[in-house]
Image (cartoon, rainbow, N blue to C red; front, side, top):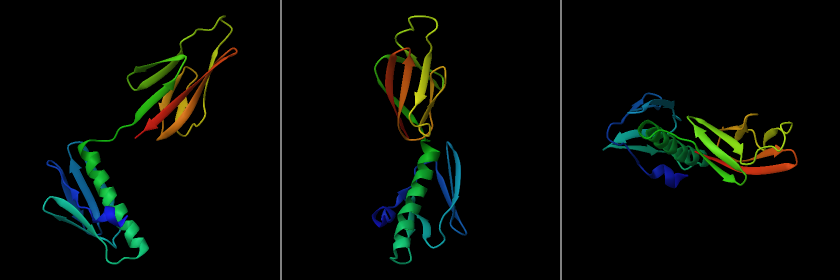
Length: 164
C-alpha cells in the first residue's frame, strides 16, 4: 500500500481540508462535512492544494497505515464533492422490474393460472439484497444475490448485483 500512500490527494475547488491536532481531518464541501481521526503515527500535511501523507519508518504496520490513511482522505474528498451511490443491476428472464422512487418492484411476467396460486419470493443472500412478500427488492451492500420467484410449479431465478 506504500505506492498508494505516496500519491498526493488533490483538493478540488470548493473543498476545504482542515488538519487539527491529533490528525483529526475535517473535509468540507458542497455535499456536506466529513470528519475523521486518523492514526497519529503518520504525518498529514496540506501543501499547494494537495494533501500529503508521510510515514516515519518502513515497518509493515506503517506501510499499511500509510496507504489506508491516504485512501480514507481521498474517499472523504470524493464524498463531499460527488457523494456516494448504490447501483442495482437485475438480470434474468420471466419477470418485470419497475422502479418507483427508491423502491424496485419485481413482478413475474406470467400471472397465476388460478387465484389459489400465489407468488413467493426468496433471496439467496439477505446481507446483500432482501425481497418483500410483494416483490420489492432492497439492496443492502455490494455483492450478488439470487432472487427466486415461485408460483405453483413455475420457478424463476433472478440475479441481482449491488454495486457501490
